[in-house]
Length: 249
Ligand code: 13P
Image: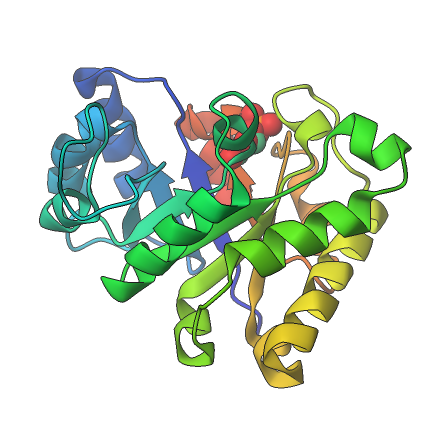
C-alpha cells in the first residue's frame, strides 16, 4: 500500500512554548498514524520540539540551511548545527526563499548537495508563479528548478530526496491547484526525473503537493496517482487541522 509523506512547514510562526504545545498535541494524536510524518518548526524551537518528538513517528525538519558547514555567515544556520539537534529533513528551495530572499537555483543546489552529503533528507521545492503559468512557461521553469537543483546529485543519493510541487499562486491564498492540474505537473516532474535518473528512480520518487492543503481537499489530492504526500503551511499550525490532513484515510 502507498505510504504518504505528510509534512508541516510552520514558517515564521510559534514561540518555543507554542511550538512545544503543538508538538505535544501532535505526538499524542498522531501516534497511530501510519504515514511518514514531519514537522518543521522555526530554528529557535528546533531543540525544544526535538525533545518532545524524540522516539516518536514524527521526524524533525528544518525550513532552510546555510550553504557551508561553518564560517563567517552572519545569520545562517549550518547543517552540522541541524544534525546536532536531531534534524533529519531539510526543506530547500521554498518559494518564499526563492522569491522573497532571492535564492538562486545555484545556491539551492549547493545546499542540496551539502545536506545530502551529511545524510539529511531533502525536500526540494519547485513551483511556478502565476505569471509564469499564464505565459505558458510552467514546464520550462519546473524543468530548470529540478535539473539545476539536483545538479551533481548522485543517483544513490536521490532516495533521500522528496520533491514538493508548490505552485506559488496557491501558497497561503486559499487557491488550490485542482487535483487534476497538480497531478499533471507531478507527472511532468516524474518525467524530468526519469530523463535525469532513469525510470526506476522516477517511479520511486515521492512528490508532495503544497499550496492551501486543508482537511477538506487533502483526500482528493492524495487520490491522484502522482501525488505522494503534502507539504502543509497554514493548516499545519493547529493540531485540529493538521491531524485530519495526516489522517486523511
Ligand atoms: P499553505 O498551506 O499555507 O498554502 O503553504 C504551503 C507552503 O508553502 C508549505 O511549504
